[in-house]
Length: 439
Image (tube, rainbow, N blue to C red):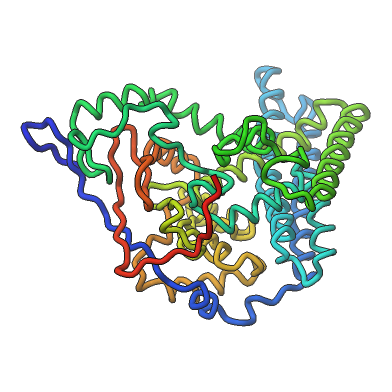
């Protein structure tokens, strides 16, 4: 809660304490039942088949109902209403097919983590097919995603959702006489300066997250948007010599690009034979929804005023893995939609902390493993569950998470007024296993 002091010239907020964890990763792994680590190719394959069956049924039902939308079946007062009815029908198909196709993306993601089966060759083969069919360069993204897992929340090593700093946004330099470095105290003058630079109009506050959801994924893999800012301009997931990759990755990047070329050729061939409209409504709209869900889910897992980011002196793998949130996807729309969201996307949003502690645990075991892990983490007092994942939450987080400071080893987002919700408290003996920071 904010209050104003000194004749309303200074705003002061009561911040929540974030107890920076100092738990050995072995203790967290030991808290998970041993059978949760078991992987089954057969069981994993059933989920792929199920996702495909649901999407096929949605398509069949939609095409059947589309055939009934005509004057011979029922009468409407205006002929344009038939067009509107078809548009609404195919829009519903796009939403639901995209949601379950996100489940296929999740299965490809599990392949990349070697959680699909005990066979690395099978994992990478299935993952390449699934992700290529969804426009994802499988190995390219698998490699950078593994680096993200190794350095989650690390300001100079994480690969995506790296917060902008005060200096990178060109904001006025920090002035300790007018504001607190932790974001608990800010003068009205500083608030005005920051709001003029960062504040959103009502329309802008909606358009910013909307454009991010629609184009964020493509922008990331093609231009490193929201990626690691120390990477050179032009960094992308299709160039084998890109800074994220090592020389031995060259062949894997080529294979990833081949998968994308086959995907593009397949889409072009389908348009040639079926027409653009049919391909657009049957495949491209669900594809855009997949990209939307991918950005929404992953952004909200890693971005919130509650979550810290670290610089090298205070980073450890465990701290980074715990700098994430579990969220119930679509739970803001009610319990039924929450169940559908978790079912369609295989719990990727609901069991994310567990996934960062041990990414080889398959999703069907993640629920039990997550419960056991949270029982172990309870005494640590760190936030583990965020607000439901949805569009309203995207809007809120975009408004509250504007920048982080250039100083500090444990930092939290500040809003457009320079105020932060959380402040860190380090354990008495704090160590780092982060290694050497790469500049």
